[in-house]
Image 1 (cartoon, helix red, strand yellow):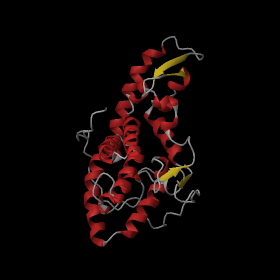
Image 2 (image 1 turned 135 degrees about the horizontal axis):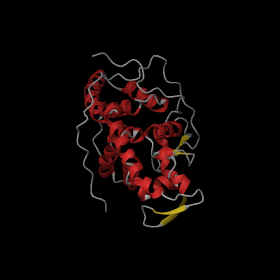
Image 3 (image 1 turned 180 degrees about the vertical axis):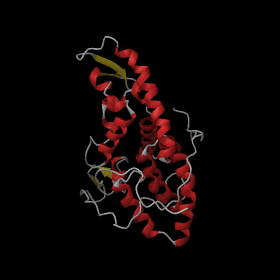
Length: 272
């Protein structure tokens, strides 16, 4: 089958190159975000345990980042995969970086490309830019294998398979929290447990905001977050400007495949 030539989920604006910088820890050679509020994990609502129970994309991305920050790359890999299973594009991009750099896995540039191609599925220019950088450095044999392994990733982790999974989780969570709105007042505050066991007070109106529970609004919110995160690098210190994605860059080089809607969740290590 021919490679896709048009984005299946076009973005409304281009991202800056290096969007992965919003996700990784500080380190001598690791990228670093220079804006603290570009990611859902910076929001007290999304850190609440009650929220995370119904948002496996952010929940497992946070756990994976915890492992990554500690250098526990082998544990981070399956947790990023679990988040990716629920349509988390940042986690898919992180998997691309880890395969490219050989963190927690052997260096595999074909697999790295396939993950980054998947991360760019919605047309986010930052991921597209990273993907094109990979492609330019790969041999013909690596490129051919990337398109082959990419089909398996798209079948299991592409939006056609992953979006229905997270949509179902959001709808279930929305129904589960609806009962809590009985007698809801605009002035109500709620106490929610945080992952570290502490309690945090959050305005009820914020916790029940539709952008956290309605699938359409949730992904519009995700788009708004990932469209313009300013980035830089620790070893350089300056904020980079995005290089234009080549005009002839396809939305994906990986041939279309049918979604595997019956795929099993990736297994993850038990939490400590």
